[in-house]
Length: 68
Image 1 (cartoon, rainbow, N blue to C red):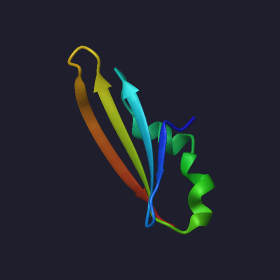
Image 2: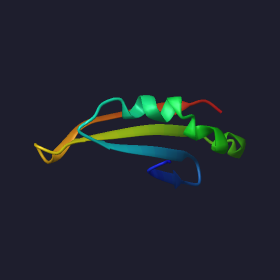
Image 3: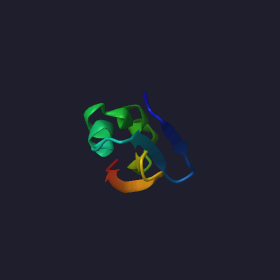
Image 4: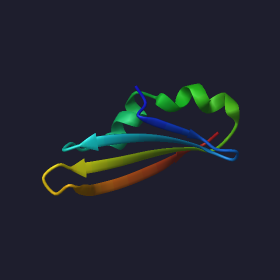
């Protein structure tokens, strides 16, 4: 299940949040969450935000664009 999708006028952002794990971006690509938005003919950005529960902070942010 997608954590958050932002449909903006000029782009779509698919965001995955993870706590105490790695490779949130890999999950977005493996699960192919972006596929259902390909027909909208807008740039699609996959964004991963990883949190550390001990530090109570964001530890990693990654993104990748999907060509349309």
